Image (cartoon, rainbow, N blue to C red):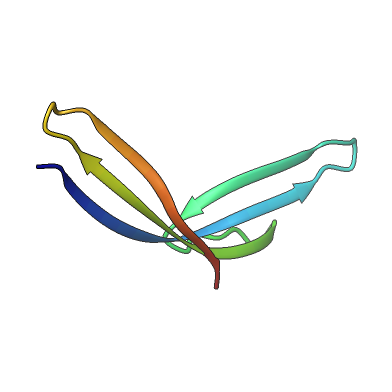
Length: 66
C-alpha cells in the first residue's frame, strides 16, 4: 500500500528587472522575502507518495496566491 503525505509551504516568487536587460526570478521559502524584489506570495501544496517498490512521486496539488 502506498503512503501519501501532503505538505504546504509559504513561498515568495520574487522578480527583478535588470537595467541592462534580462530579469532575475527567485523562489524563497518561509516568507524570507527580499525587499529589493517585486514579491508575489503563494502557498504551495505538494503530495509526496512512497510506493510499495520504494519509488516515489511528487505532485503540485495547489498553488494559491496569499
